[in-house]
Amino acid sequence: MAELNVAVVSAERSLWQGSAKSVVAKTPEGEIGILPGHEPVLALLVESPLRIETTDGTKVLVAVHGGFFAVDGNNVQVIAETAEMASEIDVDRAKAALAKAQAAAGEAGSPESKAAKRAETRLNVAMGGK
Amino acid sequence: MGAQLRVFRRRIRSVQATKKITKAMELIASSRIVKAQQRLEASTPYLTQLNAAVSAAASHASDVSKHPLTSKGEVVDEAAILLITADRGLAGAYSSNAIKEAEALATRLRERGLNVTFFVVGRKGVSYYRFRGRALAGEYIGFTDQPTYADAQRIGHDLLTGFLKPESEGGFDEIHLVYTHFVNMVTQSPRVRRMLPLEVEEKLVEASDSRNLPFPLYEFEPGPEAVLDALLPRYIDHTVYTALLMSAASEHAARRRAMKSATDNAEELIRSLTRQANQARQAEITQEISEIVGGADALKSA
Image (cartoon, rainbow over all chains, first blue to last red; front, side, top):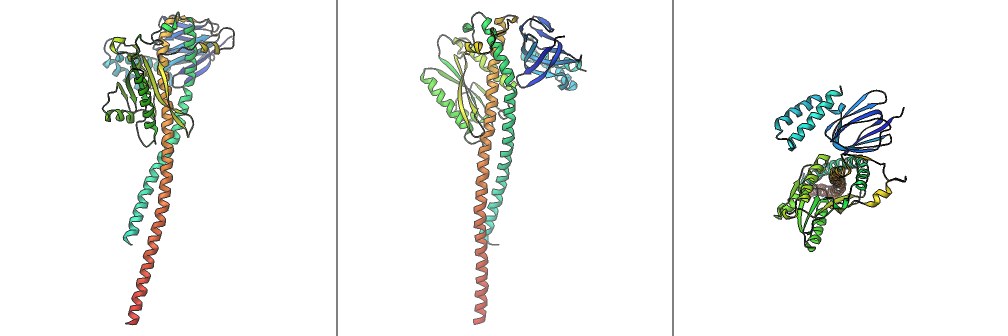
């Protein structure tokens, strides 16, 4: 079976690279699942967990905070501005950060509420990774 | 012990203490150069991908040259300069070279009849302008030796806000960047780069791939224009990030060199002081001997 070559890159470093069965990401228009043989796509990413199912069946979760991804043939490049692997996130600290961000969050669209959203995504990823 | 000898010994001790400090700073700076370079390298895959994506989106979007980030205002009268200096001194002429370059650029811009606004990174640059009582549109301090992407985003955001402001409210028509290019361990030179308006290079499209089609026929989501709108600001952020890292590497290299020559000078000073101290010690001994001999002679003849 064909495989996807996936690379997750953030502005500061490259995070993950490997072959996968599927990638599920979230764009401004909704969730999109990529399987081998997908047509070429260049889509923006919104603040969300990115799910990768590797060829050996394990699931990799990455918290992506904005960016885009490009699918070309069986190559998937995820280019996030900032991103974190589930394994790198400390659940307790993520919880504390979320509580703090939510307390500070004002109306929608403000920097504080964006921070809250980011904290939520991180926590989601951290919990889902277990 | 004679007074003279004591003074020499004290000076030697103090120079030795200084030498220890400068040597330590030299070593720290050397290790940080490598770290900054590694981070610069780690960020290149992102840039490559971003480049490819921007070119792909630009080739599909209707008219790139009309995008707000690629065009100037109708009357070009406002310019901004982002100047990157160091937070701390003891780095030779690093900060002052960058400031000099920025000042030369400002003069050139003013000759063209533009108003120049400054955004300054680094405590040294900020205090330079504060001391001269000149207003700064943005001050960013506390991260120049290890800049993060979030720092770059903050700066990029401020610059973009300034650029996208309407003409009547003093929106910038041009934004220039002054940073220090890291050529190699011994050479770093201040550079000027125009950041905005962006030039979307058509040749990028041709050179990016050897296959017939420069890009796969991407399906854009939400659409090529929207993708381009979202990607171009990232470009700014990344340019700022690269410049910050480059300048950080240069800062450490400049500090390493400054501290190396300080250490060398301290060694030289210690050597000459030791000579003088020995001389003083011998003179003291000689004097004592002649005093004793003189005393004994006096007793004998008495």
